[in-house]
Image (cartoon, rainbow, N blue to C red):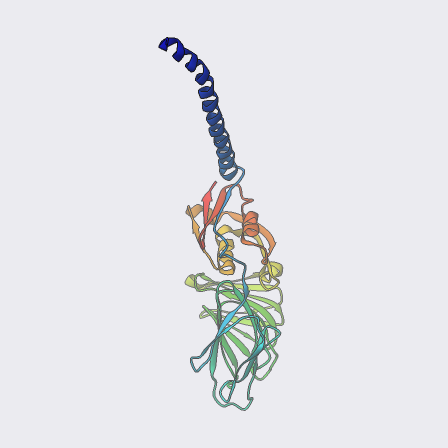
Length: 324
């Protein structure tokens, strides 16, 4: 046998096969590389600024609250109707048509205080024993007596609430907020005073209210707004943009030339999440937004992302704002 000749014949037969196999795998690898490149570009291309990572746990707010009784008992409230409690101290407290209602003994001699706490991601309504109706925004606490026994009806607020006060000329209605007291007889107004803010804002829709600080007292007329810079005790009065002020109660987000920091504070309370800014100067960017609060977080944030200077991402329960 001519070994060299035989080997040359075998090699001639197997070499083309080797080449075909090699080129086949090179083709596969090239295809995969192309797909990866396309995916990478779609995910990080300059036109796409938003990266969502596991935002399934971040949802829009719902009806929920925690009722703290004077006895120390707590009741977690949602949208289910029914009697909460009925006894000699509290009278009858029940939820009807998704509203917490007090039906109490009008001859009570001592005031028992309850606290209605609406956590971030919540909203709730309550009708107090005098018939005053209060809407509470997310991140809000209202402290009030079960019965109004004294010569005035006094409650305290931290957060944001809209009041429709039942008129009673003999008992003015007083709301204590950070840095001011707001006194009314029968009227509708909005108060905003979150612990994290240095501002307390009273906005009058109808009637007349007195706004009193430690150094000044003013009377508001309808469509007027009093804003107190708490740390400096500076109180100013101006015409109010009622559509923007009352947007939260009407299930809307409406911001007109608002700072991005202010906007993201509202979003953080409604979606119950944290906000992180990559740079301080991003907070001062100005934003115009008009969108329903029932929209998803992505839909809401896409409105914010119209600002060319930013991009955003969600990481767990935190939303991160970065420079584009």
